[in-house]
Length: 488
Image 1 (cartoon, rainbow, N blue to C red):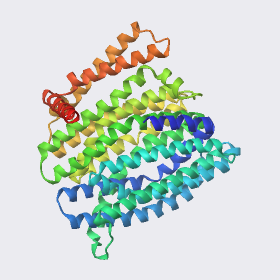
Image 2 (cartoon, helix red, strand yellow):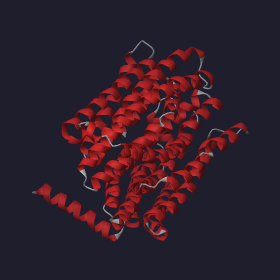
Image 3 (spheres, rainbow, N blue to C red):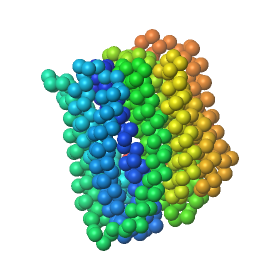
Image 4 (tube, rainbow, N blue to C red):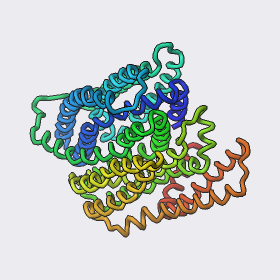
């Protein structure tokens, strides 16, 4: 998180607000056309987890090989789509200064190449997660973060166009990461060896059919993210895209904690469904939702309370709207942390048709609603306000649909997830606001002291209001065991 946030600061400083905004909007155009590959990746992850949960090694090999072939063709499809429709969109619809158009195009081409290697890496990444080799996943992520920081410093020494060189270096980094994942999997996992006898046409059909419904969800996600990014560019230009890009950087950094936690939990959710242990699955979904929220909230609350101070420390030049954009994206994060385990459990059943259809149709409204708001003269903040309302309503729809699918009672979800989350949020936020009226924060020491108090309040409220008595007992036991081992 620290590396990613500092890297964003350095990149903004090196590129400048306009070039940083151009990079984000160009990257957004490419992401818009990768919704099919993202859907296929989710399908691959589900089938790998399910087949491992069934303890069927031959089927695991067939799933991996099929996903490898499908992702290869998807990579070709993405190249064709982005280099035709994507290029047309950049030339004819985006607001990019004429003097920076050539740099934007080179950035676009390098970003397309990086995306291709990312798509080809997905099956290997999914296999590592399915096999629960989280140490490898963690090491590569840390190394990738460090190299991104090096890239940020390197472009400061470049006299050539920094935006173009930055895109080139990120493409090179993605190639290296792809090679690392592929080499590890081929060395340690026998199922990566491709065999003609493993070609199963029925499996290809199942994978593509399952991913077809995921495409609806991914299109909806594109509407919520890249679609609004493009609208902001059309109405307000690259400077507002820079502010949104920074808010996304903060969102991703904070979200990294609960995302990695969920990455470790997700295979167990799918495997427990495959082994027909629904009671254990329900407990995993409830705990994963609750703990994910708490992990996000621990870092979200200090940011919400002292956003201007954080920005003054983080950035030299702060684009307009950055602070309010970050506050709203933190709200998105909290809701998404609750939603992800529900999505994974629905995918475990293999029947995502109803969930994806309802949520997709609902989220598709975001583009016309945001367009109408901006056309009527509302500020860029209205885009985030509309999204937040949709996020909240969509979550209650997810609970209803997924509860029916995997058989948990809505009152259990409210009791074991929503109420503890509400208690912790209200108590921590209310107490922090009250203390802020009496606590002076005129210098760095006073501000850091206040933030430490906020953090302690958060931890205490999570311990007593967010965790059950049995969970506290387990944590105590783990801590005491670690202390005894250390002393020995």
